[in-house]
Structure formats: C-alpha cells, structure tokens
Image 1 (cartoon, rainbow, N blue to C red):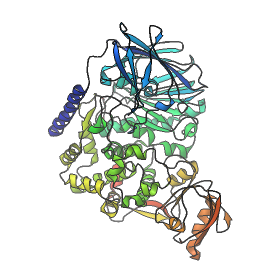
Image 2: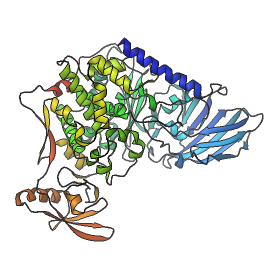
Image 3: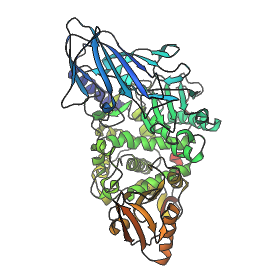
Image 4: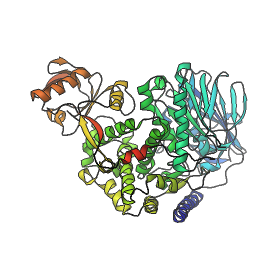
Length: 634
C-alpha cells in the first residue's frame, strides 16, 4: 500500500510539473462570464455570450476538441454558428486556423481588457421542447496558453421559469428564468453538465449516516417517463452502498446521477467527477418496461464507476492540461474494460441485474468476441490505440475490422485477472482487493491522479504476486488463439455453450432494439454469420462465415429465405429446418438495384450463447456477484 501510494504520488507530481512547464499561469484577471440562453426550446438553439478578460495583442481561442471520456477529437465544432467577437461595441476580425479547425486567431485592440464573444449552437441531440441536457464544452471558447484549471468561469443559464434543474455546479442564485452558478475553473465547468426540464424529479440516494450526498435526478418527455418505482429507486440506493463497499472511498463533494428519459435525444452516457450524464437507451420506456430497464440497468453503474476509474484515477496519456492536446488511448482497456467489469459487477450486487442477467450478458459478449474474426489479425491493443477511429466506424465489416472491443473483451480480460487472483491466492484475495487499494487513496479528493501500465502491474502484484506484465502483454498484443479469451469464464466454474433458445438478455436486445444492437433485428453471427436489421438489411457479415462464402455483404437486403418472404421468424425457422434437412439455405437479396440468389451452406441450427455450471467446481461467479457488507460513514 505504501509503495503504491508513493508510486501514484510520483506520477501525479510529474503530470502537475508537466502542466506548469507547458503553459503560462499568468491568466488575465477576473472570471469569464458565460451566459447560455435557451429562449425557444422547440428551436433547440442555445445562445452563448462570453465576456472574457484579455490583454491587448494577439489572442488565440480554442473550442474544446478532446473531451475526457470521448477518447476522440470529436468536439462538435462544425455545428457552431454566428460567431461574433467585439470590444466596446466594435467588432474584432477573427480567422480560423488553417490547420486546426478548433482554433481561432484575433488581435485585441490596445486599451482593451475584455471582449464579448457571441455565437449560437443548435443542440438537436440534447434539447427537446420539454428538456435540456447541457454540456458546457458545446457552448464555450477558452484561451490558449493557460491550463484550463487556471481559467475561471462564472456560468449563467437562462431556461423557462417553470423548469427545474440539477448539476454538480453550485447555485449562487436563481431568479425566474436566470440561474447563476458559483465560479469554477474551466475544466470543472466542462466536467459539470446540467439537466433541466418541465418534468423533473430528484431523489436523495445518500446512505444512512453519510454526510456525502448522492442524488438521482431525472428529466423526461412527460411525467410518466420519470415515474421510477420504489423498488427501482431502492436498487439505485443499493448501487451507492455497494460501490462504497467495493472502493471504501469517494472522490467527489457530492454526486449527481443525471438521467435523461427522452425518445428524442441521443442515447448513452458520459462520466464526470461529480456527476454522470446518462441518456437512457430505452428513453421514456426505461422505468415502464422490464426489458428496457434490464438493458439500461448497467448504464448508471458504469458511469458511476468511472468516478473512481477514469476521472479520479486516469491513464497518464489520457490526461492533458487542456482540451486541445491529443489524448492517447492505449490504456483504455483499463479505463473502459475494467469499468465494464466493475460496473456490471455493481449492477448485479445492487440488484439492478440478477446474477442470471449478468451471466447472460457476459455469455453474449464472450460469444461476440469468440466470433470476432478480426481478432485473427488485429490485437486488442491496436483497438485502443485506434479508438478514435473505431468510435465513429460504420457497422459494415466491423466483424473483420473490429470495433471498440476494449469494452467487451476488456471485461473478459479483467474477469480472467480476477479468477487468476482468486486461484493463485487460494481464494483469499480477489479483484475487489485491487480496486480498494488502487482507488481508495486520497479519500474525498477529486484531483485527478494518473497511472501507467507499470502502476497496474505493481498494484496487481501487491494483491497477488504473479507475472502480470507477461499476462497482460500476452492478452493485449496477441491475436487469435494466442489470447485465452474464455479463460476467466472457464476458471470461474462455468463454461460457454450454445443452444437453440435465446437468453432473455439476447431476446430483449433483438426485440427492444437498444443496448448492444443499434436497432431491432437479429444477431445470427453465431450461426449463418449475419447481423441484420428487422427489415432484413444486412449490417455486417462474419468474415469467412457461411453467408460470406455465399457472397452476401453488408448493405444488401434479404427479401426471401427458401422461397419465403423474409422476416426474423422466417429466418430463424429456416435455419432450424436446415439442421434437420441438411440442405443449404437458399437466400435472395437485393443490393444496388440488383436482386440475386445466394446458396448458404449451413446446417448447424440456431445458436444462442449461455453460461452453464461445470459440475464439481467452485462457483466463483456467485462470489463475484454477491452483495458485500456495507461500509458506513462515508
């Protein structure tokens, strides 16, 4: 423990010194007053006004490019419009950098100590007539040459007077439509989203006896969307308790789970130090429908886990002093992969998932990775290095190209680490011990500490001595059978099998159409090698699989199977029949205006992944998923 603390302290100090050496600390005096208005929610346009202290002479402004948690230079600069910069009522000419589209240059006139910046931002994915999900990096410019932690901002938000709101930002005053927050550094502002809406509900999740508050705040399209049941709220309370039992620490003043329940916004989540921006994949149906609630069950636990792994503790090359310098994502298999493992574990321990659901999800992901043919040529580490390419990559040919597999394969990697620790220690230690040791330093602090590959290896060795460097490099750098993909499952007392009946988890994925599928459809990758939308459009084909060999490709649309008009039930029925008849499947597909016939040689039947117990072995998954004794007072 002392060695780890010393190591982490050294790394954090290096980051701090590096920051000081890269940029000036002589920031112009006074905070930037930033006001964001939403005068007409139906138009979905945010109006921005910044009053920025400056000095005369050349000035460079940045629009945030690399947003922590996005792992990509994806700041939506292309959506920004109407930029005007003025001083004393007179416009100042500006020009965009010819190389870096996120950078603006201007010259501040002599005698000027502040400038007015105005622009508009249409945020169609985060605004509806009933609600707002505001992320400040969309609506702010900041000065180049200074660390963002030294640039102070005074934020004001103007929204309809009858809307309520929640944020980790501290409120200074509210008067009607105008909400003024207390000043914060720019990096904290970007890290502090705000949700607001007509239909709003906030629930206190704070454990008994704790002085550190945790809240679940919800906005929705209507009142029904935010009507979480008492039992569902209780599971979120258990999430807070089980996270405390796992980490024995917190790294925030208080914490806000910000949940948007809309059918008209984007879906997904983004982690922050003291809050999480969660947009339910099920939209308004999350709390109303059991399958939607199951598929969204791991969203908030994942983002909450990031408060420890990713926000407080972060890979060294993912930390930068501003939002302009490139992030390097090679350690994202820890940032995201470990968070999937720990977050899903907390999902089960809290009751948001049953142990059966956890096993069904892991079975599905393990099968997906086992059939990811791109693993034959592309090591997992390259998916991390190229993360910014893969996040925006199309579904077509992703089976061969690979996706952001550091999430799903990362979970399998950390399951294998957990099982290795348990096995080598005679079940005296587990990954819980690693999580508690690694993330519990500086309890209460949310000043980011950084870590390297060697820090991870040393921390694992502090729990259980082993050649962790060799183990991890073999997994990260290996391809195909060099990687023991299913070793964690097999060491846990379970094994992966396939039957002709889908699990509830996969059935919900295909019928509900959110979560790990982009829409309603069918995943037949494990059989004929097709990934289809519900209308028969082929999204992906397993490279070298039966459908691939027949000549089918992404973008084509199946119109018939064995002479029957295509539908998901027809496809399943004909795959099942082929197992009995031992006859090839005759498919007709349309692509680029041409309709053709394809003979698919497959008679292996329907295949759906499941985990089953191995008789005579210890059920380690039961231990992994069991709730832990509560830790009080923090």
